[in-house]
Length: 178
Image 1 (spheres, rainbow, N blue to C red):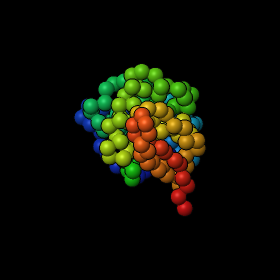
Image 2: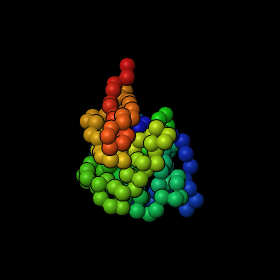
Image 3: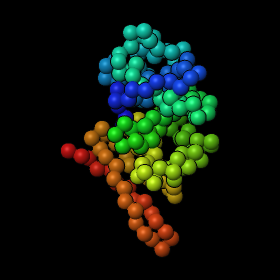
Protein backbone atom coordinates (compact mmCIF):
# COMPACT_ATOMS: atom_id res chain seq x y z
CA UNK A 1 0.00 0.00 0.00
CA UNK A 2 1.24 3.45 -0.84
CA UNK A 3 2.66 5.69 1.86
CA UNK A 4 1.28 9.16 1.04
CA UNK A 5 4.10 10.80 3.02
CA UNK A 6 6.53 9.72 0.28
CA UNK A 7 4.84 11.92 -2.30
CA UNK A 8 5.19 15.67 -2.54
CA UNK A 9 3.28 17.31 -5.35
CA UNK A 10 1.26 20.40 -6.13
CA UNK A 11 -2.32 20.76 -7.35
CA UNK A 12 -3.06 21.47 -10.99
CA UNK A 13 -4.54 24.92 -11.70
CA UNK A 14 -8.19 25.02 -10.75
CA UNK A 15 -8.11 21.84 -8.68
CA UNK A 16 -9.08 21.74 -5.02
CA UNK A 17 -10.07 18.98 -2.63
CA UNK A 18 -13.14 20.92 -1.55
CA UNK A 19 -15.43 18.59 0.35
CA UNK A 20 -13.60 15.45 -0.85
CA UNK A 21 -12.02 13.51 2.01
CA UNK A 22 -11.76 9.99 0.58
CA UNK A 23 -7.98 9.89 1.10
CA UNK A 24 -8.85 10.23 4.82
CA UNK A 25 -10.55 6.82 4.59
CA UNK A 26 -8.48 4.69 2.23
CA UNK A 27 -4.94 5.20 3.60
CA UNK A 28 -3.16 4.41 6.85
CA UNK A 29 -2.11 7.69 8.47
CA UNK A 30 -0.15 6.82 11.61
CA UNK A 31 0.29 10.48 12.59
CA UNK A 32 -3.44 10.67 13.36
CA UNK A 33 -3.89 6.98 14.22
CA UNK A 34 -6.02 6.43 11.12
CA UNK A 35 -6.34 2.95 9.62
CA UNK A 36 -7.13 2.21 5.98
CA UNK A 37 -10.79 1.41 5.52
CA UNK A 38 -12.00 3.58 8.38
CA UNK A 39 -12.61 7.31 8.39
CA UNK A 40 -9.94 9.37 10.11
CA UNK A 41 -11.44 10.71 13.32
CA UNK A 42 -10.76 14.25 12.04
CA UNK A 43 -12.50 13.78 8.68
CA UNK A 44 -15.83 15.44 8.14
CA UNK A 45 -17.14 13.43 5.15
CA UNK A 46 -18.68 15.73 2.59
CA UNK A 47 -17.29 18.81 4.38
CA UNK A 48 -13.50 18.43 4.60
CA UNK A 49 -10.89 17.98 7.28
CA UNK A 50 -11.68 19.04 10.83
CA UNK A 51 -8.02 19.89 11.51
CA UNK A 52 -7.12 21.19 8.06
CA UNK A 53 -5.03 24.11 9.36
CA UNK A 54 -3.05 21.92 11.78
CA UNK A 55 -3.08 18.58 9.92
CA UNK A 56 0.17 16.60 9.98
CA UNK A 57 2.82 16.93 7.28
CA UNK A 58 1.89 13.44 6.11
CA UNK A 59 -1.50 14.80 5.05
CA UNK A 60 -0.20 18.16 3.79
CA UNK A 61 2.27 16.50 1.40
CA UNK A 62 -0.23 14.25 -0.34
CA UNK A 63 -2.33 15.11 -3.36
CA UNK A 64 -4.08 12.42 -5.38
CA UNK A 65 -3.60 12.22 -9.14
CA UNK A 66 -6.95 13.89 -9.74
CA UNK A 67 -5.58 16.91 -7.89
CA UNK A 68 -2.25 17.02 -9.74
CA UNK A 69 -3.20 15.89 -13.25
CA UNK A 70 -5.54 18.28 -15.07
CA UNK A 71 -6.10 15.73 -17.86
CA UNK A 72 -8.10 13.48 -15.49
CA UNK A 73 -11.76 14.30 -15.95
CA UNK A 74 -14.28 15.16 -13.24
CA UNK A 75 -15.42 11.55 -13.11
CA UNK A 76 -12.07 10.69 -11.45
CA UNK A 77 -12.48 13.08 -8.51
CA UNK A 78 -12.32 10.66 -5.57
CA UNK A 79 -15.61 11.64 -3.94
CA UNK A 80 -17.35 10.88 -7.26
CA UNK A 81 -15.25 7.88 -8.38
CA UNK A 82 -15.09 6.35 -4.87
CA UNK A 83 -11.41 5.64 -5.43
CA UNK A 84 -8.16 7.56 -5.04
CA UNK A 85 -5.50 7.38 -7.77
CA UNK A 86 -1.81 7.81 -7.00
CA UNK A 87 1.58 6.77 -8.33
CA UNK A 88 3.91 4.73 -6.18
CA UNK A 89 7.04 6.89 -5.92
CA UNK A 90 9.39 3.91 -6.18
CA UNK A 91 7.82 1.61 -8.78
CA UNK A 92 5.70 4.24 -10.57
CA UNK A 93 2.84 1.71 -10.49
CA UNK A 94 -0.61 3.24 -10.59
CA UNK A 95 -2.33 2.59 -7.26
CA UNK A 96 -6.10 2.69 -7.10
CA UNK A 97 -7.32 2.85 -3.49
CA UNK A 98 -11.01 1.91 -3.51
CA UNK A 99 -13.56 2.98 -0.92
CA UNK A 100 -14.19 -0.31 0.92
CA UNK A 101 -17.89 0.52 1.23
CA UNK A 102 -18.06 0.16 -2.60
CA UNK A 103 -15.43 -2.52 -3.33
CA UNK A 104 -16.50 -3.25 -6.91
CA UNK A 105 -16.80 0.35 -8.13
CA UNK A 106 -13.51 0.04 -10.05
CA UNK A 107 -15.11 -2.60 -12.28
CA UNK A 108 -17.79 -0.16 -13.49
CA UNK A 109 -17.53 2.09 -16.53
CA UNK A 110 -16.01 4.45 -17.34
CA UNK A 111 -13.42 3.38 -14.78
CA UNK A 112 -12.77 -0.25 -15.71
CA UNK A 113 -12.19 0.46 -19.39
CA UNK A 114 -9.75 3.24 -18.53
CA UNK A 115 -7.89 1.07 -16.00
CA UNK A 116 -7.51 -1.60 -18.70
CA UNK A 117 -6.18 1.00 -21.18
CA UNK A 118 -3.69 2.23 -18.57
CA UNK A 119 -2.66 -1.39 -17.90
CA UNK A 120 -1.88 -1.86 -21.61
CA UNK A 121 0.00 1.44 -21.86
CA UNK A 122 2.04 0.71 -18.71
CA UNK A 123 3.49 -2.59 -19.88
CA UNK A 124 6.18 -1.02 -22.07
CA UNK A 125 7.64 0.65 -18.94
CA UNK A 126 7.17 -2.53 -16.87
CA UNK A 127 4.63 -0.76 -14.69
CA UNK A 128 1.31 -2.05 -13.46
CA UNK A 129 -2.09 -0.95 -12.26
CA UNK A 130 -2.83 -2.18 -8.73
CA UNK A 131 -6.31 -1.89 -7.23
CA UNK A 132 -6.52 -1.95 -3.44
CA UNK A 133 -9.55 -2.51 -1.26
CA UNK A 134 -8.00 -1.88 2.13
CA UNK A 135 -4.93 -4.17 2.03
CA UNK A 136 -6.21 -6.61 -0.57
CA UNK A 137 -4.69 -6.00 -4.01
CA UNK A 138 -5.58 -6.97 -7.56
CA UNK A 139 -3.35 -6.38 -10.58
CA UNK A 140 -5.23 -5.14 -13.63
CA UNK A 141 -3.65 -6.74 -16.68
CA UNK A 142 -4.65 -6.31 -20.32
CA UNK A 143 -6.24 -9.77 -20.52
CA UNK A 144 -7.38 -10.40 -16.94
CA UNK A 145 -7.40 -9.20 -13.34
CA UNK A 146 -5.10 -11.12 -11.01
CA UNK A 147 -5.96 -11.08 -7.27
CA UNK A 148 -2.84 -10.92 -5.07
CA UNK A 149 -4.50 -11.10 -1.67
CA UNK A 150 -3.19 -9.00 1.19
CA UNK A 151 -0.40 -6.72 -0.05
CA UNK A 152 1.61 -5.12 2.76
CA UNK A 153 4.37 -2.46 2.67
CA UNK A 154 7.14 -5.09 2.56
CA UNK A 155 5.56 -6.93 -0.37
CA UNK A 156 6.68 -6.47 -3.96
CA UNK A 157 5.12 -7.35 -7.28
CA UNK A 158 7.22 -9.29 -9.75
CA UNK A 159 6.17 -9.90 -13.33
CA UNK A 160 7.47 -11.76 -16.32
CA UNK A 161 6.35 -12.35 -19.87
CA UNK A 162 5.64 -15.88 -21.04
CA UNK A 163 5.07 -16.83 -24.66
CA UNK A 164 2.01 -18.99 -25.29
CA UNK A 165 0.37 -20.23 -28.49
CA UNK A 166 -2.00 -17.26 -28.13
CA UNK A 167 0.78 -14.70 -27.66
CA UNK A 168 2.54 -13.12 -24.73
CA UNK A 169 1.00 -13.54 -21.27
CA UNK A 170 2.10 -11.51 -18.27
CA UNK A 171 2.56 -13.57 -15.13
CA UNK A 172 2.57 -11.76 -11.79
CA UNK A 173 3.61 -12.82 -8.33
CA UNK A 174 3.55 -11.14 -4.94
CA UNK A 175 6.64 -11.70 -2.78
CA UNK A 176 7.60 -10.44 0.63
CA UNK A 177 10.99 -8.72 0.42
CA UNK A 178 13.07 -8.95 3.58
